[in-house]
Length: 351
Ligand code: NAD
Image 1 (cartoon, protein in one colour):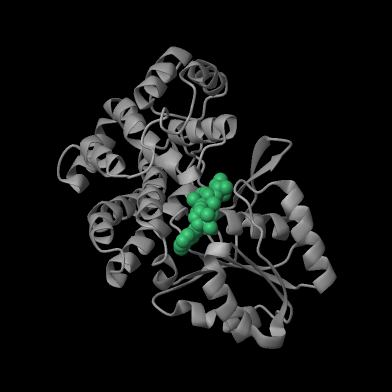
Image 2 (image 1 turned 180 degrees about the vertical axis):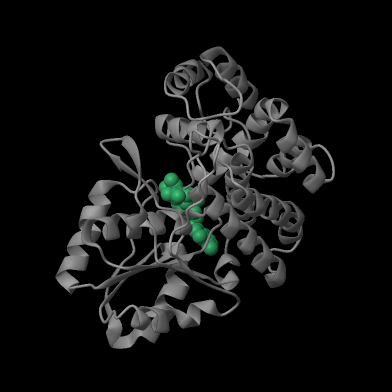
């Protein structure tokens, strides 16, 4: 992440990261673990990634020490303890995670406790694989930490692994990625580098997502979308997120909401709230979107066949005020000041 020094000088810092991207990149994973000196791989995957996980297990042969297929969203520590016991029994010397942010979060939690090197193989657009952030839950409370040691050293992007995403997850996960880039554009600690990543990523998502939704099997479009999501993840790693991510964090925890759907439904509302306060970002987004960016993102978000409002997600309307107060009491850096009344209004619109 970059920190703006008080003098107005911007600081840009990146994590060491090796990325392999492209169709068939997953076949390189055994060579990557070998490169790390690993001889006993723990393979973490979600059930949705069983196919590629089985394929990798076969390719690793005797290099596979154990498998764990129980990652859960928001990285509950009791699941991490179970996986840790598996890793210890197996004498694992490396973790490979295949799946969405939940599988990658578990690998980060394991690596944070053991120092094991990680290879992350994302199957969604959530972006966690390139960040040093980890959110963990214990007794229903989610805490987030940021430590460069948590970031996977190697990331493998194979668009083939995104083909199985249903349309709804494709849409909401891509909007989750878009939220990283949009918030990076208005971040107080944005740099020329993060602006470049964010602009390219917004452009990639807005131009490619409709093509992927029209034909989810279009592998070339899937590859472009995955690349845009990679850049969005880097935005998340390099800048401090604002109101959008804070709302997603608080509401997701308070009402146990699905991560990507929550991001997708919130984004147009937060853009509508913040953009009047950041005219240069609004102009930039309008240029990229070729028109009103809020309308463009709303159109995409409303196209979701699943829940597109808090009411449809089962959030009680009378719970919004308390959530808004919690957000206002501990504000993230945001270009527009947001008190509890303003946040309540925004949440009611989204309801
Ligand atoms: P997820 O990993 O929870 O997956 C959602 C669902 O989609 C699961 O049922 C999963 O099995 C399925 N799935 C995943 N990939 C699939 C595919 N290719 N085909 C079919 N089904 C597939 O969802 P997510 O949105 O990727 O990740 C959310 C989690 O990641 C949350 O815990 C969130 O906090 C975390 N996250 C962390 C960061 C970070 O920087 N720390 C960033 C983004 C998300």
